[in-house]
Length: 490
Image (cartoon, rainbow, N blue to C red):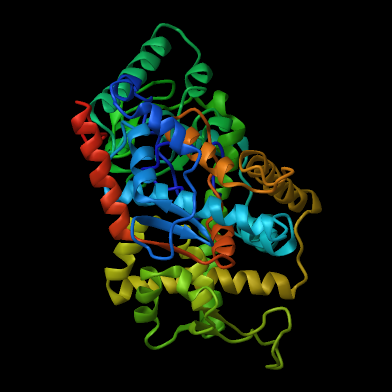
């Protein structure tokens, strides 16, 4: 779930360090379906999408408890989803979505509290951890990092660091040529409106980069080489106040804007301070690792590669990948505020849940030095969090409450969508309607936190049959070809 080829645009995002993004596949081509001879049958059978199969897995794509997704019904969904790539990766993500939603329905029916402490911890783990790290860094180093307006203006004028904003239209190899053309035309239209005197903020309102929209499209503060090469070249050619042509990257179509200093003074000051704070923290981290005898355990890199192959299998593992000693006082006694500790396989498996599969595959095959560098980076973060807890540092209660409210909002959506609170309890019909709605782009959906999804799946017997998925793809292709339609494959 929540990866790049799903056919819908999520309305919220999994926060921090490791981020997974969805790409909207574009509007539905209804004329294809109007030509299908079995359209009336499709409408009638979608309500039975999650009907139980027999005791074998023949004809079944996935199971969650006693609910089953059959090959025939997945094929019907794929037809309804056109244009959509009939490829095992995006189709697998669609199946994973069904499995997770079915697991949520069944756990709610079994009485699990989706707002309880365990569920909440899994749902907000990543964003809460990032907040702890930010608060710890500010507490340790914030007083020594000050940026004045005059200093920030001088940096802006010099141009080695550039604050850039964008309007973005997604595109990718999973999109058909017509979908790519539509996205490019949208970007061209938005650029023309800006050139004709239109508002940058109005253009940002149509951007598909949900992360930057609340800040006027601001992506961040970057030095040379820190952006993808295509965007880097464009960004470092712009003068303050200039807008770039539509620029295509592997992710989509970008319109880049370099604001003038008065437009972004407070943002620039804040981002410059954050950058300098991060640089100070990196230097302090190296000193801390030396003082604490931080070490990657022998064989840690090999274990990390295995974790990347299947993070879920390692979530409960206590196997150490790195260790560190307590910091000592002047007398050589260990300080309770800086205890000894270790990075376990389970800790890093949590991080890996937020990494796209393609990146995980790369980590599984990378060299020992790079793997040890990753263990060091993640281990340093774990050390900082352990120290913060030992010092008794706590988050602002208002911030903690905001995490709970965000999770509660997500659960309200799922409760309504899957009829979790209905008189008859969670139902197969509600899940069938949800799946039909999202593949036809008639219903938005939300991406579950990867750890919350893992928490659900631990409590339900689930399995996916790849052979059944491939059979459903073949059925969908045959149905489209017999109707003279086209698939979502470019």
